[in-house]
Length: 245
Ligand code: BTN
Image (cartoon, rainbow, N blue to C red; front, side, top):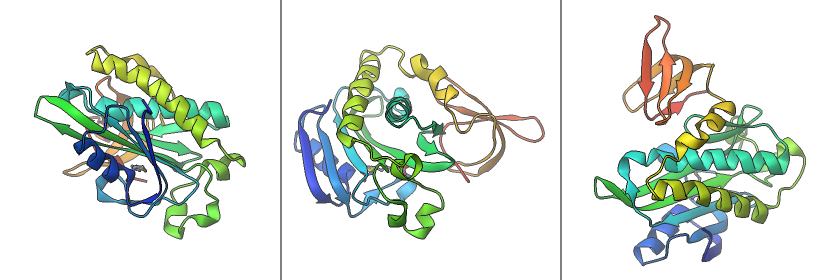
């Protein structure tokens, strides 16, 4: 992963550009990165604040795998990023379900995967990653700084983004190979995900596509499902959604 590299000083969204390049035939492993994004995409249609200093990149994947395992793309990426960022910064990096990266209860990174499938197999994916690396806290708009922070602000040190991305790609590539071979992948790092979870054991409110579920996050299954135990003792399985603050 990471060959070739397409770098732009400024782009609307590296995910958008990566999809375009993929449709023009860009090979598996292409890395699209930018210094700044003018309309970075977040999950659930949100805008992603993409000031210079962050690591903003998207990976093009073109190896087929089962659609039922698409959730592993982002869960694996979150585990790989957790490991790499905590090694490089010594910060206590946590994963907020499903795949946000948190430091000191604030978001430092997010993952947005966009897939193409024929209903059974995923044949193309763009995995977009945003990490707030060397962004001074003053640069964040007020509403963003209430919920987000940067590695620079939390550690007091600038992080080498080339090293971060390089280490991530090596690790993520190894994890994805299991997926592409049809072997268990997330299962292998499931314990690691749980060990660094910001969500498990907490009282949470989860916004799903349908409603808001309130309770204690008691378990993350090997298929990425979050179990919420409600006040009346009922366990509800949540497959996708968002943990509200
Ligand atoms: C989230 O909402 O948590 C996901 C954020 C993903 C942001 C990254 S930055 C690089 C890539 N390009 C985009 O437009 N979005 C992703």
